[in-house]
Length: 443
Ligand SMILES: Cc1ncc(COP(=O)(O)O)c(C=O)c1O
Image 1: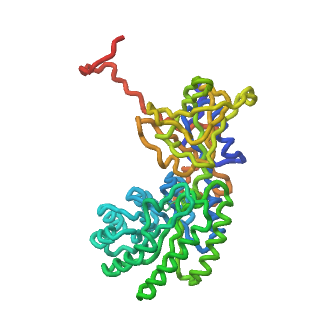
Image 2: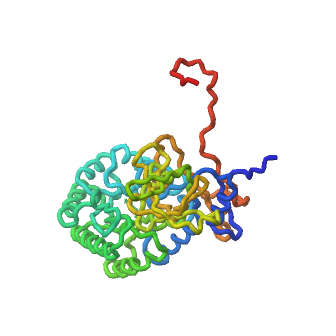
């Protein structure tokens, strides 16, 4: 008799179980062989609500580049958010959900003519620029666009976006605004981004002050701007990490932009999605190597930097999923984590010393809170499949969103929580009878 539990990719409605308990049940059942993510929809929902509560004046345009998982995006659409799209592919994904193109900002400052015509033909109206060259292209290919000038604001951030984007406030911004006016282009606002993973809470204030100056310049010239875009960059490690920065943003907005008709938007990515997903990874091999006096454990995982484990942020950790009682007493040893590909760069968490108990190929590791810029970066290098995502939702939230336009009722399932995800292995091809004259290997 086949005792196998049927695999499912549906959204699991939880009775009282936690997302961790679902992962544990999947692993313990032995049927889930491949690495997987658990996406806790309630956690993402909670982040959206908390952001709205802390920044009531600010409308969220979700930066879907951070996590474009269909269910995350559908949740954002259900909650009425706008979207920061950064490519025609992202625009297409959002429009397929029947979201209005007016809810999209195409927040890329350097676009090819065919990206512009794609956005324009799709009905998108808003985009950003930071150079004279871009303005000239916009004039030719998207002359009716509503533009936001992107200025550089460098915070103390893990990823300093100012290295790549944003004109200089002191030396370039005014000239660009004048050039846009001379070209008869409509600049409706100012955008900045303090960098992704920003630790300096005063950076948003700097951006808002510069924005005010540009608003004043335009007003003096008889041109009215009406959108302030404060970008993303909000830290994701704790739910309340937004609490401090939001106080400063709210008071600065009150001081500098008291006019309630000025629309204030933000493009958070990491803050909304990071904490909602954890990654569970199986081990395919372990080796012990001795170099000089040092013995190091090497663990070969089933996902790596060419998959979804490319970046390691300061708050990221890895733990052993404990299912064998005897493991608990092991003293953690220095461990190197390798990904599954043949590339020597495929080493995970190189920037920290990893200590783990002795592992075997039957063990699993847990990478908590890996919802942002993880699966979104996964490549198809070496035709290795990227992990699938098990989405879970509480009864309470399910009741709230089940009848929304985005989710279909059959997407939600009540099934054994240990059900594995469908296998990502490709189907087996049987070519043994082929007569093609390729080289063949000796028996
Ligand atoms: C224009 C823009 N907006 C928003 C974001 C999202 O930033 P974060 O995930 O740090 O909130 C990014 C990230 O690269 C971006 O480039």
